[in-house]
Image: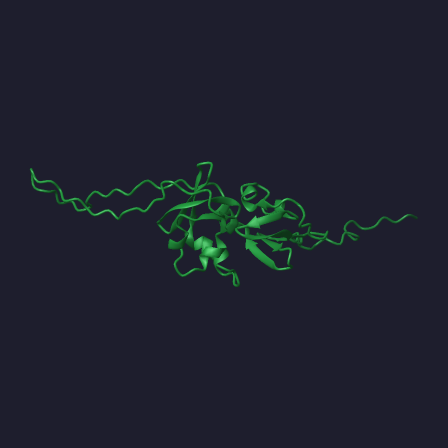
Amino acid sequence: MMQFPVQGMNDETHGREAVPAIQTRELMAAPDFNTPLKPVADFVTRPDFPQCVLGEHLDLGGFTGVVVAVIKQSIKVRSADGATRSFKSYGLQRIYGAPVEVAPPLDCSPSSPEQAPAGQAEPAKAVPAREVIEEPNFEQSVRPIVRLLNRPDFPRSALGQQVDIGGYIGVVVEIADQSLKVRSREGTSRNYNLLRLRAIYGGRAGVKT
């Protein structure tokens, strides 16, 4: 007489908790450094980032290489000379994401409720002078931001310099509120937080300045 297996007897997952899929993807083929070099800024706003950069030849603020692995929310990038670096995806999105609008100037009116006597003008409060590059020089050579970060006079040394920050190229036209304002040749502007720039690029040793 034909016997039928008891339901669940051959089901190996029966009674066990589902094992979460490993969030790791690795490049199976050898890295191709002959493919066009693309700025990482082209990818950080995509909904499938960082998975979409696997196998891409990227420029990450002066460090170039092919993405050989995506591990959870980090990417592993291998350069043509064999060096490998890891980058956090959320850090790249914060630096190279949508341009940050420049904050409006602060209200410099007196905060004290006391009013000046009638007929007497209120004393003007001293406003720190802003040093702004009104006419950026886009004909100068482009310098990766990593070459300036380790200098003792940074960020002052970056003012007026034409820099490359993850593929976004422009002149540093102002330093304010712990950020760099960078204006491109096309007229667009982006703000980059100094702490985030140091966190991603500042610890690289051996970079010539």
